[in-house]
Image (cartoon, rainbow, N blue to C red; front, side, top):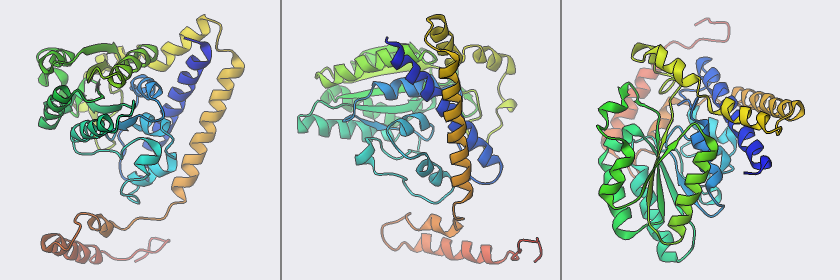
Amino acid sequence: MIHDEMRLLYRDMVLLRRLDSEAVALCRQGELGLWAPSLGQEAAQIGAAHAMRRGDFAFPTYREHGVVWHRGVDVIDMMRIFRGLSNGGWDPAKHGVAPYTIVIGDQCPHAVGYAMGIQRDGTDDAVIAFFGDGATSEGDVHEAMVFASVFEAPVVFFCQNNQWAISEPVNRQAVVPIVDRAAGYGMPGVLVDGNDVLAVLAVTREALQRARDGGGPTLIEATTYRMGAHTTSDDPTRYRDSAVTEEWAGRDPIKRLLEQLQAEGAADAEFLAEVEDESEKLATHIRTEVRAMEKGHPLTMFEHAHGHHHEGSHSERLAFGEYLESFETVDEDGLA
């Protein structure tokens, strides 16, 4: 691994963490409605994203901020979604990444369908579907793996096992390692340390190349840990052992790569200062742009729920509108 690529991986992980922490802070300040933190999962996301080629396509969950950002999506477009101002945020065809998927697991059949389309087009691109350990309990994921295996679709199933499906521990999701399920679908399974960005990059590159070469799908289980809350509406201290969280903190993926770079003389003070400066500029940019955004109106949530008039949705919209109008208007001085 050349040091230039290692430094780029380090830089991207640092920036992802800063992006993430800034979004959490803005959410606490009432500037964003919700955020799903990626703290602790930087290596899994950045390593997998770097393994992709330009023509490849990713199907993310609501937590793959690093993947979405690395595919060239403007960070402010990402923020607009969580401020309730966007219903997708970017052009999937331009960036090679689908919009965030909120429904657990349903991006996996979409990924397989897209991969089968690539297969029929005769191109050598590949697809990667991201999901968490909790999604492995969903039928959509099972069905996607069956289809992918039968049709030898050029797709990689990338499971970030962060140990928790909200408050449900992984041992309630599977009695054997998730990666062992691959054999039942007739595809190879690879277990990788999800906090080792170099290992993630290597196994994902190999799996994507296998898919391009006609070898069919691969299941990757990247073991990591969700250091933050499930979302900013969650309080993990109510169900997690702090000692376990502290243990995983000692396996921090960013610190791990930095120590290797320094040991090999590839990260001097100038390089670290440059990354820190870029991190500060990114944080300032996010804060400034988000705070300058217009305020969304709650009624817009009904605008794209149905493609045509739906009486039930229309009635709900009217009722919700009346509810909103029942509140007193307060001016900037806090006076009604």
